[in-house]
Image (tube, rainbow, N blue to C red; front, top):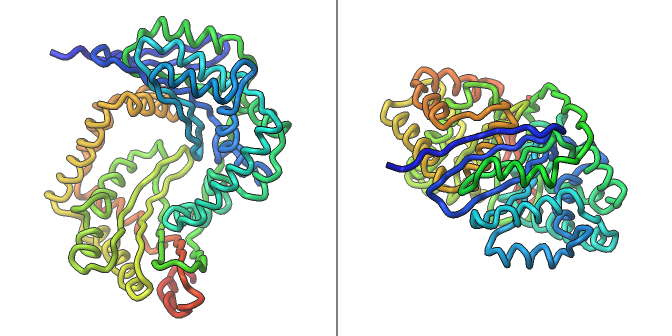
Length: 427
């Protein structure tokens, strides 16, 4: 019989939260330093600073050069990386359990002691500007940013994580250090480990690095989100029209998010989904079609994305809208709902085999709810979803208000392709 995992939480006197999940039957450990700092926290003059700070923390500390950071992690046989999201930035490493203290020494040094060298800042500005250009050259990625900017244009959740070119071009050392000083503070940090580790030893290690950090982060103001169901069209010489349709979803505290997860699977979450089967398999109108649902602290989004030729675009969008309407009107079959539940359950349970997934799930539970949301609790919420729940939630999400829409394609050469398609939403 396999040993059970154990989850523990300790709060240092200065407010840093430490969580761990011990998995005694694995050899590795994933550790992450999570900062409550993301695109959500950026006013106009800071658009992109969270992502840029993430880049700069790899560029050298008071005692390590950027090359030394890379060499030391490679010498441990580990993996070091980071990501910035709407609400958080995470610096994480995966190593053998025996190297956890060494990995924490590297990651903590990056977070606490980065130099923000002016020469490195200048060089990295060019790197990030190239990243922004690459993003804009990838319409199937850019269209998702355009959608959130459209749907949430009056809220910082609409900010692009990658940033604004004009802002990034003018970022200064002072601005970067001020940002870190304001947001990378004890009560805004959650440090999480999952895998082959001992909680007491982990707390001692984290405390040795973060225990003397001082300060208190200003509370993140919760701002009401008003969705804007507008249509935004970007003319670009692409072969396909890339589109995203977005509806208001549910925030992290809404129990309806579990029903929406089932709707996502049924409508566009895989090869058996309605959109994939109808639009790609039965009609051959598009190569790419799907959906996703994301929940944040203040709001959520349900999005449908795809790419189609100019000639097929109208049929693809009309079929997509029809499937959404049908889902809300007629609900689903028991077979479809059972398949969706099993799909979600399988993804969650299989994800438990990854220590990085366990670390991330534990961190997000703490950041959103202040407690561990056990896997059994999540699965029970999914399994309780009924056909009536699906009909009710689908009717609300896909109601008469319609969708926000973002489209990238060769519209100057095809001026009539969108004529009348979104009249209801433009009104």
